[in-house]
Structures are given as C-alpha cells and as structure tokens.
Length: 378
Image 1 (cartoon, rainbow, N blue to C red):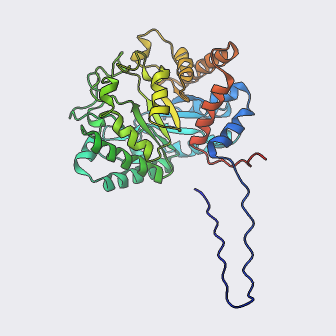
Image 2: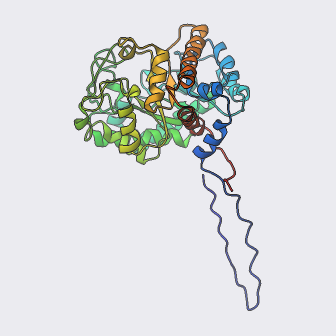
Image 3: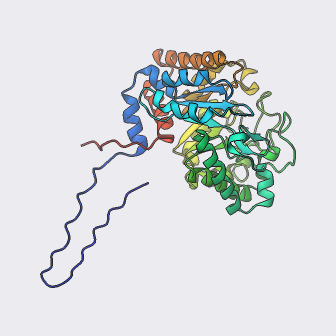
C-alpha cells in the first residue's frame, strides 16, 4: 500500500496564509530491495534456509517450531484434519524466527477434494465446478472467504489456484494431474477464473501461488508418478500460458513451476530448467517469487536426481524457493530440509552457485510475505 500525500492550499482571503505543508515522508526502498538489504547481512546458512520449505503433518508439528528457530523461511502442511491447536502453533512461528519476520506457511487449498484442513478453513467446490457454475465475482468471493479462514488458521500462503487448462471432467490421478482441479478447457475463461480466485485470496492477505507453469493441461502421467511433458512450447503460447499471463498482469506474487519437461524449450523438469525459468521471468515478465513443485516427485527421482541435488539445480536455474516432499515423520521432514540446506551451502562453497544468487532467491521469499521498510540509500 502506498501513502499518497496531497498538499491542499486554501486561500480564504487577501493576505491569508496557506496551511504549512506536511514534512515529506522519509524515502524508502522497494519491498524487494529492502529484503535484499536485510538478507545480505545474514550468514550463508541463514540465507540458504530462507529458500528451503520444511514439510510437516498437521497432526505432528514438532518439526515446525524447531525449524522456525533455525531460520527456515517456509513451511508446508499436509493432512486431512488439523488439531485445534494449529492456529496457536502457527502463530508462534514468527516469534521463533531469528529475525522475527514472518515465514511462509502454506497448504494446498484448491477446492473440492483438495482442501487440507476443512475443519478449520471450510469447504468449497472443485475449481472445474466453480468455473462451470459461478461468475468470476462469485469465484472471487469464495476465495475471499477461504482466504480469511486460512488466515485465521495461521496459513498465509495457498498453493492455488491451478492455472492449468484442462477440460477433462475426471478426478485427478496418475493419468491426469488436473481434471477437476482445473477451472476448465478454455484458456480465456480459465484466465478470468484464475485471476478471480487469486485476487480473492490476496484480498484476505493470503499469498496466491499460481501453478503449474507453463501449464500441465494435457500431460500424462501425473509428474508425481514419473516423467511427463507439457504440450509443445509453441502450442502453449495460445493455450497453457494464457492464464499465467493474466495472473501476472493482475499482480500475483508467486508462481509454482511444474515438474514436467516442455517440448521445444527444455528436456528438463521445468523447475530445474534455466530456459523455463528465464521464459517466466523475461518472456512473461514475472518479477515475484518462483517456487518448485515437490522435488521428491517421480518426474525427478526416476531421473536419479536426489531431492538435495534437485534443490541445487532449481536455484541454479533461477528458482527462489524449493519444496521437498510429504514426510512420514517430523524427523524425516527435518532431515530432508537439512539435506537440501547442506547441498545448497556446499554448492555455494564450491562455486556451483554464487552467494549473490542465493541472496536474491532468499530476498524474494522474505519479500513475498513481509511488508518491509528500509531507508533509501543516500
């Protein structure tokens, strides 16, 4: 939010004095520039941890408080039911962070069968049902309500909406990653619906993460199960990319990369590909946070790439934030996060990654969920 100062001069008669103009506001840097300044002063370990997302089951939150105290910048929660204590636990994380800045606390709350904690955040229809039965105003209102419930639960980031263009009326599964998760099969209409849902979340102060760039519509199998390819890059220009362009124009703060390769652009999973990330940054003009999809997915593991190596590859490609996988235990969650951290740290130490690149990534994470203020340089 920008404060606009207006000086109104009222002349009430000959010789009347105009009111004194207010003192000018102290110039400040942009939010991202301020985040960069803050992160630049951190230790390398702290910088790296800011880029790593720690996974947790909502019914087993021991890993969250420990990870927050260590300075991790993101947390993703899994599960079908959340304990009543979840809001209090999540609310404590900012105070545990070394700099008392808010971490990104996220879940997958798309609608229909993919809502993590309906006992706390409520329920709403599948995106495809919303797209077929609701106006964009109604979709936005639904997202406003959902976002407000998420915020009350302590969640400040939603890994939604799904911007993939897929009109197949099927439940998502191994043969189709989208189905009902997509708003439909029309790029233009989907774009309007994606923007409506994202803007509703943002109105409730929840970061909307539009996914899965450059669009998984028409891919098979689901990248959770093995390698998959999107439609050709040339075809995506008028299909899959349309909702992403609209969301970027509407000011979304975050985009998730897919784990699919892109014929005509890259043979790598998009989140590990500098060509794919560059296309998002430079061709589509996105300047916000870029995160990976789950790096434990079959599309990556079946290429014999470990989660730790994939985290390094993603940051090298220009991604800002790396997600591991759904853990079975708190110990496994912390071990995965620690492994990613160690691999990224070693990559900087050995010159595979530059410190400046990791600082830039960490700054994007910090800026996505914090309103910062730094004095402008003299």
